[in-house]
Length: 170
Image 1 (tube, rainbow, N blue to C red):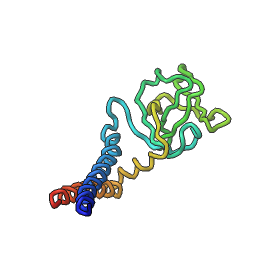
Image 2 (image 1 turned 45 degrees about the vertical axis):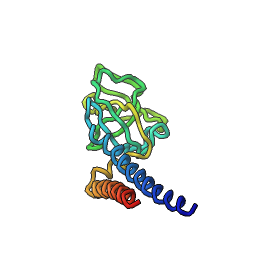
Image 3 (image 1 turned 60 degrees about the vertical axis):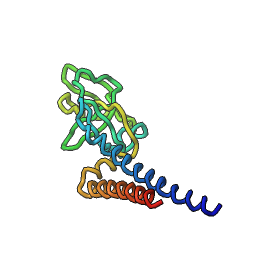
Image 4 (image 1 turned 90 degrees about the horizontal axis):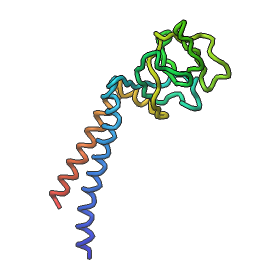
């Protein structure tokens, strides 16, 4: 009986290390994949920096934005637009095609914005959002974030190698 328990422990540890190593590598892939397909087929990723759309879209959410022509935007759409070097997210309340501008009203706002958004300021229409993931994606674009990702990859491979060595020793 003791021999069986000892052998079982020897096979369980490599399997556990292998699973943890593979999970670390998959996490890295899941984080890097959206960044790799940035601007693929007209889609781009952005971090929500303003709270105008709360509680629908929280500050710090990761949003996927599709580049669309200004004429395709409809009332009620949530759009990302550029203003004074920042990108802002808000809902289209009204459209004035004759002057080429949108009247915006964020879900957190009681009234429409007094400053209108021109068609030229349009970045795109939001198609999807993931709460709290925006800052993580921003971090991954910094040198420190790239270092973290490299360390996670290294740990994943090391765990897989250790698991293989333990299997061979058993």
